[in-house]
Image (cartoon, rainbow, N blue to C red; front, side):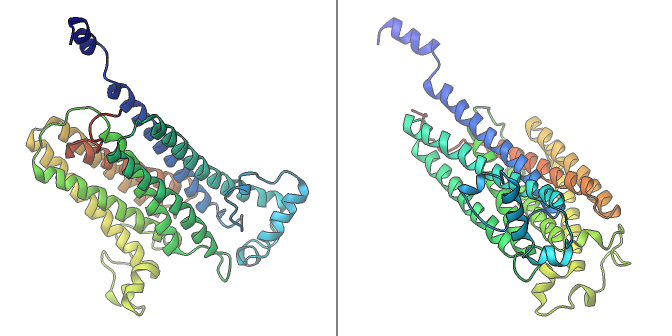
Length: 362
């Protein structure tokens, strides 16, 4: 190699140093779109808008009604389902349009995410920017996203016949799967960064990942609470049904016993409370442990996460005491995404290693 070539190699950035940040930025952009979609999805649920579109048209459904006749036809379809007949009989067309736009926007954002992920991904593959190790992970994420779209319709379908709302089982699965996909995208984007990760004790890395799991479980339980409208009852704290731990006869009156964890409003809300306490204690102890370890990078992330969990718990209590008004309930759901984001980023930065690239991004 000539002196000039050697100097060029030392001064010009390696292709991977340019391409990896671009791929990372793309994943961050998709993650932001997911956050927006999750918040809009929360608003759709809180405004009882999720059943306003009674058909699943993945392609043609991208266009909203463009004439008064089409609006009337869509309204007529909605009038055939139990939610209209039992809860919204007499609703005006303008009122229907309000809930329709919420659901249409939520579905549109889902389509936008699919396009924002797939089209750049295919371009990166065509250009050879994605190595096999990362390629498999990204295809898996895309597959989960496609599955999520089908799960969304599966959820909506549960409320079209014989019910006035969607199944809490399907709602919780739909939300938790979306959060899992979000974490996977965020995790992958973070691992593409070239920041150096300080050595930390193994216990801190393990607990950081456990905290991500606890947050996801708590989100699942929160979705069950939302699906059962359990936040509208037992609006006292710290006691619930007059006790810190309600009588077992009230917690487990349904048979078989397992159904209480998904269908008994008292049990579901109690579980959500207990998981909140567990997550808060775990986050606080993790922060104290990180501070004592004197690993500055670990301590800052752990403390920030503990503060976010504390704020989210306080917001949850406030929402409960106020009987879950829409503004507070939506803020509480957005707060869960903030906690999940901080937990995911913290776990990655504690874990070391990078995304499986098999070398550079050539």
